[in-house]
Amino acid sequence: PPAISQVEGSCGLRTGNCRAKGGSPGFKVAILGAAGGIGQPLVMLMKMNPLVSVLHLYDVVNTPGVTADISHMDTGAVVRGFLGKEQLEDALIGMDLVIIPAGVPRKPGMTRDDLFNINAGIVKTLCEGISKCCPKAIVNLISNPVNSTVPIAAEVFKKAGIYDPRKLLGVTMLDVVRSNTFVAEVLGLDPREVDVPVVGGHAGATILPLLSQVKPPCSFTVEETEHLTSRIQNGGTEVVEAKAGAGSATLSMAYAAVKFADACLRGLRGDAGVVECAFVSSQVTELPFFATRVRLGCNGIEEIYPLGPLNEYERAGLEKAKKELAGSIEKGISFATK
Ligand code: NAI
Image (cartoon, rainbow, N blue to C red):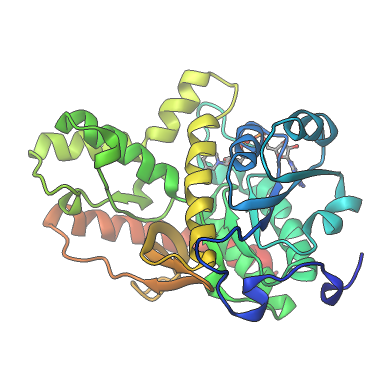
């Protein structure tokens, strides 16, 4: 593959400058795992995103068909397909943003951690490719268990000497999307008007919706708080069980992934005030990674916000979340460093 210095076009990330606001920035985006349940609706929605000028579809199966299909959409982005490991580097060269939904999903009865053995290796290989071909790209990691795959990615990038914690983001947006929907249902509001910060991580008890900080300001009874917290924490399992063996959330996940990717691209473009929740390298707690609200900008994460005031229920939830998270983070780090 061509060396990084030969990459065409100018990337705001590489120069450290934001793209001109309001113009057509034309970002290059790669999706790894593009032919999968999340991958296919994700590439369709990204092909519709006016901020994207080039869209690379990579998978180990079926990319020619998905690419041919998507390429007929009359939107601006140029679509190219890449199949199999020998084409991974070509898929990655010059990318501004890499979105990773590659790997196996859950079946009923499985936890996200049960996916570790297969997905850890997949994420490691893909991140080695990123280190080599687009070390300055923003990475949106969707593959589960996110609580472990993000630490794995960080270790791979460290080993390659290219780790920039501002550019590695575990995607927890689906937890926020679900929270907004479920809270809106309880409050009788339009979900688009609701904003629920979700902190911690992306599995069971580590998913911590901060219902005391919901916008618009509102209050919940103890029963409502318990019902909502439990439904949000088990939202993924609700879908896994309904799909009865056919996989986990794909359509709502693709929607959430695009919402999050679009926020990253708007940040890269230089838009002000782009704030979303993500699982990132963090000093908000004693853990090395934690999900909180972050401000996205030209360099990826520009600012990590503190947790804000928590009520007693949330403080107890936080302690529980931290305990489980610590183990998942450690598991990822030891896999990548062994
Ligand atoms: P899927 O099985 O439908 O698709 C996964 C795709 O990854 C397949 O097309 C497969 O060929 C591809 N793949 C496998 N190994 C690969 C490799 N080495 N390189 C590139 N591609 C490879 O699974 P689905 O439903 O799309 O889920 C993907 C992942 O996303 C799972 O790990 C799932 O747990 C996770 N997920 C994460 C969520 C989040 O909120 N972060 C929500 C829902 C799912």
